[in-house]
Image (tube, rainbow, N blue to C red; front, side, top):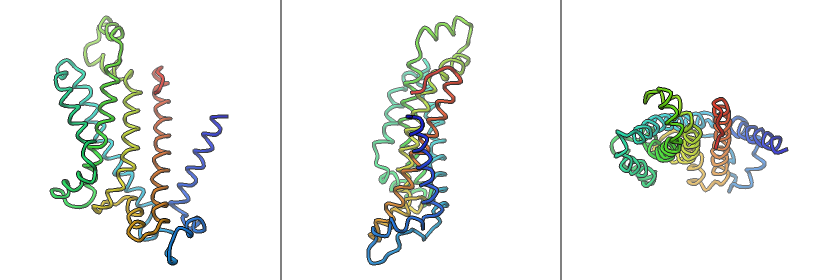
Length: 249
């Protein structure tokens, strides 16, 4: 019953997202009461599918860059040669979350100009912390007895890392990626304030024109994307971890 309800919710969320992107006019009766002075309840200044695609490009580009650096950093600081750098690395990762994304955008546009680049910088910094911390936690929780067994089998450092430690840490690493992705899906909306193409354009248009229908439209699309992408990543996590005999978190 629980699985049936979950599948029905997924189908409903996906159907609603597709309607909002490709047939938003179907929702006119629902959104029209949220407008004032006969304003249009449907955002038509730009293509919603195009904005959604650009939004996702910002997300996946930033997550890919953050993921590579954070996982490599997590591996480095959990090796004997890099253990002394753990506090510094943790401080750097935390700094990305300490600065508000608006402040990062303001600093970035002074050197990179307007557009997608300052948004990518802000999203990159925001995604570092959860991925880095989960990578470190995942690698540190590998039981010493397992590591001793790997050494007893004659594995060298690289073999132990790729055959034992990373597979065991994988559920936590994927969890960090999921958290970072959901954070960035919402945070990417501010990119429209610096001329980056994203779904924030719809929300900002609603704020500027006092059009609640636009705000709800943009917010729901972003929210549905976050829910569905998180759910998809969770299914991928379960599939990957089951293949290597682990339980997902």
